[in-house]
Image 1: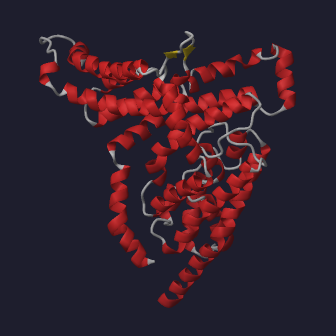
Image 2: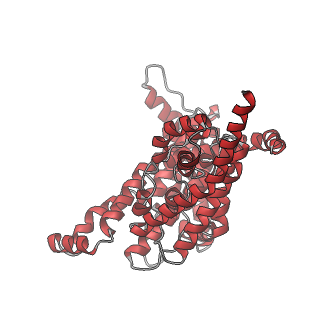
Amino acid sequence: MNKFIAFMEKHFIPIASKIGAQRHLVAIRDGFIVTMPLMILGSFGVLINNLPIPAYINFMNNLLGEGKWQAFGNNLSAGTFAIFSILIAFTVAYNLAKSYDKDPLASGAVSVASFFSLGAIATDAEGVVNTAGLGSQGLFLALIVAVVSTEIFRRLLGNERLVIKMPDGVPPAVSRSFAALFPAMITVSVFALITAFFQAAGVSSLVTSFYELVQQPFMGMANSYPAALLLAFISAFLWFFGLHGANIIDPFMQTINIPAIEANKNALEAGKEMPYIVNKPFFDSFVNLGGTGATLGLLIAIFLVARRHKAYMTVAKLSVAPGVFMINEPVMFGLPVVLNPILFIPYVFTPLVLVTMAYLATASGLVPACTIIAPWTTPPIIGGILSTQSIAGGLLAAINLALSIVIYLPFVKMAQIQEERRITAAE
């Protein structure tokens, strides 16, 4: 085990660290983080409209009229999920430009303008306006536009021949606006020209076509059981070596998260089968119980069988409160779990077992697919109920928590035995 850890530290960790610090991935991650409060708000709109309690539905229908009382939840959705791609086009471009020390506001505005130039809103042959590209359908293209437009814009900003210099005394905001004038015009024109070529070839909506040809098949692959296993493994594996695995894979997770949630929400409202099992609430509610690696199960296992391990007990007592709210840094670095050979197997293996249980339970119909993005700090079991709008979700989370405890128990016991032997040898 020590040789393996040494090998990973020498050859793997430097590469993973570079990937985790790559500016485009960091910009995508930070861009999504900015939008998460709005996505959670939109999820509560879905919860209000679709709370699976017949008495509640009947009461609201009788009180305010059938369908009318759902206007508030629909409006929340219109202000969150329905404009998600626009938000991402701005926030990702903003963070990427900021990393280059360029004007972030101008970059965000240019990105949004470029996205609309690419056909975020399209009109079909019959004159019907399609706004689906503003929501999750346009997400992948919004990400591409945010990155490409910012790279073009920042390079043009560095060209002195394209900068209009204003005299001294002009307000800084006005000077920045004129400095960005020609770079912004050129950048947006590039995307408008690309769209014109596709329209000439008969593609009425580039966003919709891209969604059907690329984004939807990609989401289908990412929704598979092997993909869920891979995501769970990578996150725990990176965390074991002290790298924030969740942050590193977050850009990938988020590209499938919102479209999958919205597709499930639409299917739920239409009374159809929900198409996507794997999304971020799936991991938050059923896999990362207490944090990556289901470390709440580890803490409970310590309380059960390692009470004579003073170091473990001290850390466990300090870590259990944060762990209930899905914060596991205290146990990761305090116990530690990081680079702890005894805990390597259960820490990496436990998420794979929990993914398997959750995937099978959802695929078989025993538990509904997740349609709500609960705050990531929502305690286990409660998160399962909220994300699935079902008691079955809470029951599945409880079963998975129990499984994590069972998996950790023998390894925690082994750690205590080793500690007792160390103390005996020292005496």
